[in-house]
Image (cartoon, rainbow, N blue to C red; front, side, top):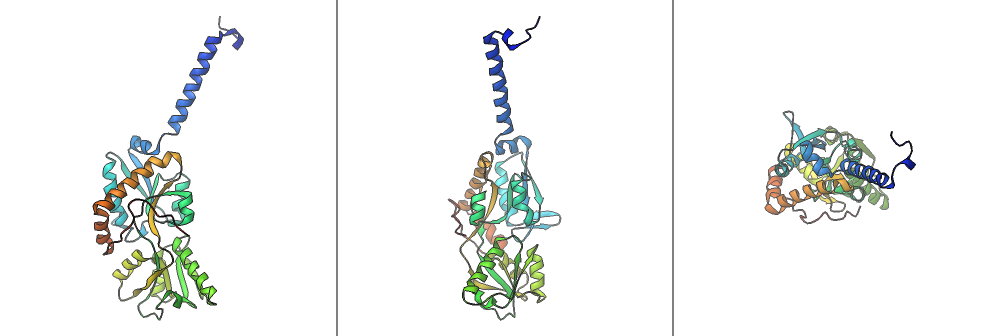
Length: 288
């Protein structure tokens, strides 16, 4: 006959049962919180979020995501044999929220390293310069960033470039000047189209991207130099949690190898036409 209550069990047996239950619970928790890099290796797949509308960093060509970041990623993935990179093309407005919600394992897209993002996410080593400049029409009378006062300016909704543009607006306001209007676009391509059509007077974007825009349409656009605002960099991003630390370290080590070997510079020249030296040891702490 089986014992009916715990009182009927010998103390040694009760202790053994409790120890076994505790061991199972610990094992279950450890499995559930398995290191993300190890999960990726076990699945044979890493889910990556990308905004493939940011040439020449990332863009779609013949149904495939191409560009500078795609080439960097391909080099780094050589150190994850047997793992497939499943890249999801998502509008910029859904990139970081999607990462936070666990829809992606990692972000391989041009994330401007701002102070807020630095504190909230695990940002990678720099991949390129992200300092902001203004794109204007070739025949524009705008010669300096300050000349954009009384003009219609534009940038992408939710972007660091838009915040930099608003910062320029604050600088102008301190001098008793202001923009005529600040317009926001879902994509930079839309903003460039309206700039070419004369519906806006200037678009704020990172200097490397503007160089690409001018390269494609030298008769239509030119860049106002020097760039305005503080020196900033583009990075990739992971969640800032314990489970993601090893995955972040894996990508940092990959980027460091590409930087110090000269491969990163080679790819910059391929996609931008010039090199952008960036730190290989750490991402400088953003000031804004």
